[in-house]
View 1 (tube, one colour):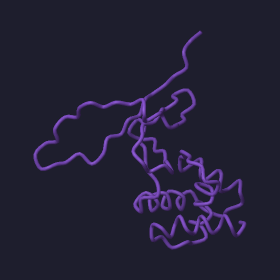
View 2: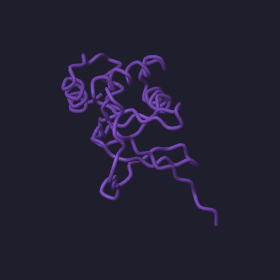
View 3: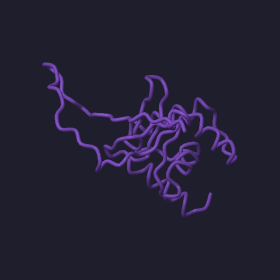
View 4: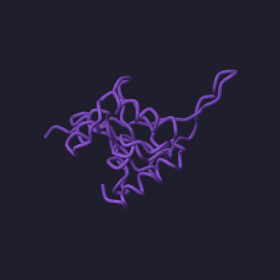
Length: 140
């Protein structure tokens, strides 16, 4: 990988205190190498890594995504309680889930208004609120 891109991936990992192993660098480059935010599944990232010639197993991809989430580099968004997407934009923001395409994208945060949340039960606090708006194509 070009030195300039490797430097950004190394910096991205370093800001979270993660050691830049060969596998982490390869996956970090796919996730943030172009500076754009993206939503990936473990399987789509594995396929991209394989297509790019990176020698990583699917188990390594899952473990690396978990490490990136634990370090605060990625946000995990779960759809249907079982399908996880990993978002490089870690700021709170809503998402569109395109049912027909099984795809996640950002929704405009400035158009979302939550005026009130229920009180948390005793002994608990609200850690975050996730908003996933499910979409399907309209029928002609």
